[in-house]
Length: 391
Image 1 (cartoon, rainbow, N blue to C red):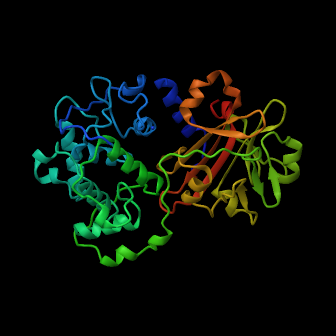
Image 2 (image 1 turned 45 degrees about the vertical axis):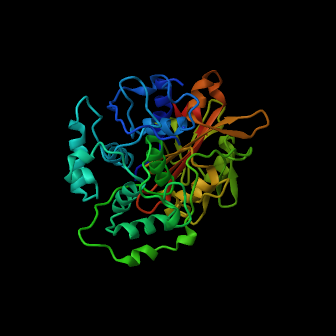
Image 3 (image 1 turned 120 degrees about the vertical axis):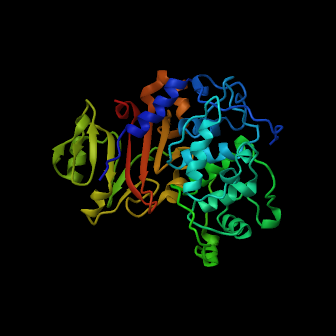
């Protein structure tokens, strides 16, 4: 089984280290979007914009590009081609960056045709640069769930899962003809990400049964905010094995009374115990722990975090409810970052905060989860002192 490691953390931090520092509707004019690395500095049209964090997420996940003038145009209307490219990239399909002609659109629409998505530009190339409406976007998204519904049923399906932009409580409140800005298009994809969407499916040729509209109890569907932070108490990075609680800073002697003798050494001087993999600092105190699904399969002991996330039992939504959504990048990887406070508690921070406070590097910690893309169950988790994880 693939082991969780410091790579996701490294990639997130590296992105910020290399970059430096998340509705009004614009006229329907479309400047050409190209891969111009807009986040070498904060784009001028994102400074103090409410969507700055959202666009940072989109840029780090390679969902969006910038424009030749160094802007990202958050309030410009999104074209159908832009929306499709964002969606494909956001859920794991490689798409070319925009070029100085329209060649990039061909790849986008080739994929839309293969997946049988109801994109107007597949049949009518002149529609590719047209602003996308909320209704069109929702029909494409529902198709990406592997469903083929008539328009009204597609909207009903999205409503039951709290996917409609603006979170209306009834279809009468949903304006299908309203055009989406680039911010709103990206926000829709972020909303889907934190609410469990992991991959794209082909739309079937035949219409889907209307039974799928009630296949899930919509009353149990939870809708999470796109970005939220949760501070942790002093014991927030502990791991509980049965009745034993292990904390960062515990000595090797204490751990071995609980875990037994180490069975082997792993990479980066990690010590592999029967139930846990740990690292000890120069003072022989634990500064990192990790555990994955095979540990649970080999023991009857429950393994949980301080906030009750239980390996092999808890799912993505349990993690987001307990720790917030800001750390969830998508594709089953959640990395949360914290700064140790004077009172021993942990302040939740965004990744760019670490860059801004890099002179206090030794105060930062992280907690990470790996989520299975099919079952959404937690399969791996770790916590540690960030400088070690970056080693």
